[in-house]
Amino acid sequence: EVQLVESGGGLVQPGRSLRLSCAASGFTFDAYAMHWVRQAPGKGLEWVSGISWNSGDIGYADSVKGRFTISRDNAKNSLYLQMNSLRAEDMAFYYCTKGQYQLLSPHLFDYWGQGTLVTVSS
Amino acid sequence: QSALTQEASVSGTVGQKVTLSCTGNSNNIGSYAVGWYQQISHGAPKTVMFGNSLPSGIPDRFSGSKSGTTASLTISGLQPEDEANYYCSTWDYSLSAHVFGTGTKVTVL
Image (cartoon, rainbow over all chains, first blue to last red):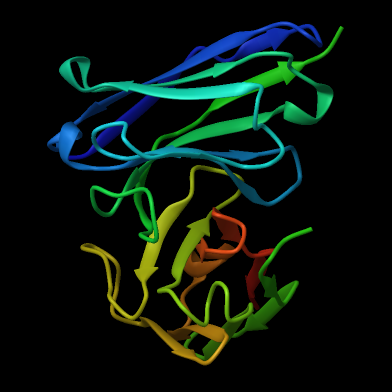
């Protein structure tokens, strides 16, 4: 059974940093692209970032480019999102999602974690 | 501003067929497969369709199709447990980003 478990969310002040983690199990982690998708309270889904199976291809939404960094450790079956210079508009549930195939694009998402909440407030 | 446009809401009675649409352009839907994701009561999303293929465990009353720059998700035989928000998504090569639709709330009357 595929499981994606996010952690690292919490309350953070504007301008500060936070690192999210996603622990994956139930599939061959290093064979698939992985992504972060977020949802602000009462809003729709927004793709944040994605990384190919071997970290050779990485992409970011314009809204986070230059502030967020995605990475993965295939030996630990883990995905990360380093979030710097956080803003109020970054407040959201952050979901870890598994890509259908190895590459970042143009493939779709097949499994989702339960999400971790990031609250940005002073 | 979302790159993909969906109806805000769709409703139907139990057993009825409902169709949700997702409209984009040649840079996204016109070029790539579309995924559909169900979100019940603000819980975690669940994938209910890849293009026109059904993920394992999803009932076959769900079906997907695409024509030009519009994709559709049809629920044939609406059930109470289908009440949820549904989002479409695909890759957009001009944006070099995955894009989501605005979301459709399905209500079972």
